[in-house]
Length: 78
Image (spheres, rainbow, N blue to C red):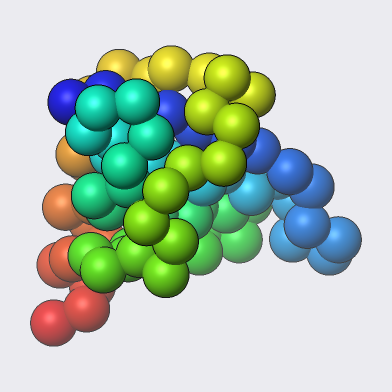
C-alpha cells in the first residue's frame, strides 16, 4: 500500500490536497480531498475514479497523514 497526493489552488478557498490510498502501481482504493484554509474535508470510500492517471505526477506521503484525515472525515459523516 502506498499513499500519494496532488494539490491545486481552489479560488476563494485556498490550496486543495487530494490524497490517494494506492494498491499496486495505480489502483485507487480510497481517496480524500482536504482544503485546510476552510477546514473542508471529503472522504471517498468508493472513489469515482478507480485508476490513478499519471501517478508519477503525485508525491508520496506518509500513511499517517492519510489515515488521520480519513479517520476525521469518517467521524464527521456519522
